[in-house]
Length: 366
Image 1 (spheres, one colour):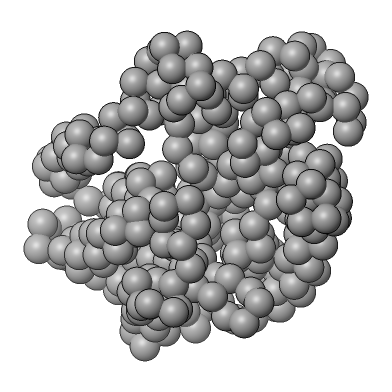
Image 2 (spheres, rainbow, N blue to C red):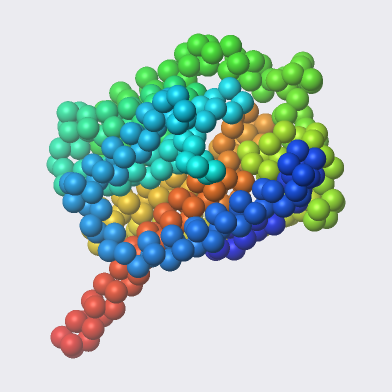
């Protein structure tokens, strides 16, 4: 399913970007070449991660590296000459002709750290002081990402933090003490930046500023509405002709909806839903707490981002820049997501081996 979604993503990126690639870069295949490279590298990473002993991530040294390395990379984003700015945000590190988005790596690094720490401190998570290391780690990542600025990924990490604490066994009253203030912080962050207030206004009534902040959402709704039940056909989207900004990345779902219609989106999210369900089943069948939290964390990263992207594109929540995992243009997201699915597969293989071992022992006893 991961490979199928990624391959469909390459096709969708070509359809959504060929006009922009031709007019802006002189090559209709400009974005597709990069996406194909990401698919190949991601497939190799997925294969390798599917064969590694993921249990080694549990030890203290590995989990601290998984946490600190992405944070160092997030800090390097702000170093002049190293960080790459685009559209008013500095979210990438330039490495030769390639760019790396550290926030994508930070999400999974946080999952590894939390799973390792929680599995060794199960009793301490019932106390407020016991969850402080997880809170501090997640909070530090959120602050670094917010400074880029990137509120959408910050919200994803915040939601992931709360979910991991809940799954780790945190007391409900402690959970509420953290969750409620976190929810109250969101309007403060919106008020703090004028462009976020503008986006909120555009969400409430995009037609109030059809050529300003409301433009992108209106064009997205036009694309979805034009798709109807069955779509206008592959490669036949109109909105990709520079009407809809970021059609190949954050709003690629709008182009998919226009070309494949409502039923096409239902099928796409049906496959994504099965992938999320399988991830939950893998976590359910684990025999140790570390594997459970690791599998759930990987599944949550994919699930949270997929749901938020769909809500943004459909105008259900205020617009924010967030790619659709495995589908949108962007090598860092594609490679790291595929690699994480490889680890999820490794956990499922371990579950199967234990099931076979248990059955053999049972048969021997009989």
